[in-house]
Amino acid sequence: MAPQIPTGTGRLGERIGLGDVFVSWRVDELIPGRLRDRARPPEIGRVVDVSISGAAIVAPASPQLRRGRPVCIRLDDADAVVRIRRIEEIGDDDWRLYGVEFVETDLAFRDWVNGLLDARRPDSQTLGWDRAD
Image (cartoon, rainbow, N blue to C red):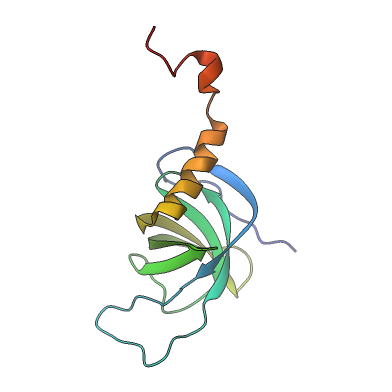
């Protein structure tokens, strides 16, 4: 049975549903007050949807992840720090839906999000938004 992914969230902005977009999840994990002796391998998460303020990511369940926790993610060479705002069960004990808010993004990650949003906007050339007549 396929996991049931909730759609009713409180995120700001238009949500753009995505196909198979995978990110490295918990890259070089941020743990306040603790240093890692050795890096742990990142996990893989699937981005379900994205908006200007955050994303919904299905990733492995972990007792260390709680609301308010920062997590580093990576999409190809683009990095972002997100904060977990909600965690929901999706019908599979090994996976959770994490609603995350973008805290800090590098330029490449921001360009990726903005590119998705721009693709959904009306064509500025045909509407004349590019000139002040």
